[in-house]
Amino acid sequence: MKESTKMLLHYITGFLILVTGAIHLLTNNLESFRWMKAILFYPVSLGVFLAAVLYHAMNGLRVILIELFPGSRSGRIITLTLMLVGVIFFISGFYFLLILFGG
Amino acid sequence: MMKNEVRKIKFKVFRFNPAVDSSPTWKIYEIEADRSLTVLDALLKIKEEQDPSLSVRYSCRQAICGSCGMMINGKQRLACFTRVLELNSNTVVVEPLNNYPIIRDLVTDFSDLFKKEKAIKPYIIRDDVEEMLNPTGMYLQKPEELLEYIQFADCIECGLCSSACPTYSTDSLFLTPMILNKAYRFSVDSRDAGLAFRLPALDSEHGCWRCHFAAACSSVCPKGIDPAKSIQLLKRLITSSTIFKRTRKKELQMVSRPHATESTIIF
Image (cartoon, rainbow over all chains, first blue to last red; front, side):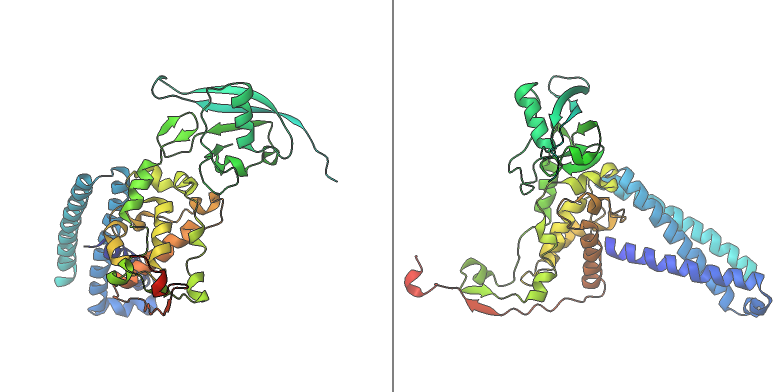
């Protein structure tokens, strides 16, 4: 993946965190938004929130680490390691969401 | 009429010869400065009158060659462009530029920058190779097309921006503001069609995306170029061309070269 694509996704996921985070807060704190919890939209938005947070956090960490440890080999190791960590977190988080909303 | 004030100023100068010294030292010199004396003049006066072993790089003395960049009172400045009394300090601390290896005393090594500059192909690249090899005319450029890059073309390659860059201080592979500004200057030129050839360097892990817009480069640029702006514009240019596949329409009108009649062409 090109660096420009990775960074564009970073900005998009930043925006998605803002939107889905707001949905999560509103649904759980305001009575007038509570109806959203009953429909599929809410668990889907939580799934999107999980994926966006993980991508944004892992890519942010990648950027910090490749600046601290410059080099093509270290860059590859950092990217692959963080990708693996992100996938593991996503699978466990998604499993938790399935248990919570799947019945 | 302004009074020609003369003040005694202490110069605290960084001294280090990597071939001989194990660690850097500071030497203090005292000179009389009037309002016309620049830091470069002062250093040359020290070299002539007090310490001939002091090493300084300079050439034009008028902020055009970009050779005499150094840290003056903690900030990246051109020594020939900085008047001693304007610093409003009785002690002037002079050090080599940050982020570069030291050759000797105040002279730093820019070879890493010049190596990176080659990677971004800092020249006009065109599709019509035949015309490039055997030119028959000149490309016309509209004033608005010139305005798109003229500000960024004023770079004198003094390296002050790259020395101030916080990313370059940790990431030695980062292309640095000086090089990225040059890449934008050529990529946005209406005569150029070479962005695709520059992308492997620019759109890489250590390319333009590592700029976090601290804008330290713009604050020290002696030519007011604003490299931080050119890097943000470069990001936009790369995003629109690689992700959204939007290429700028570059239609060029050509006029024949003045005086280029057949009789004047020498084969």
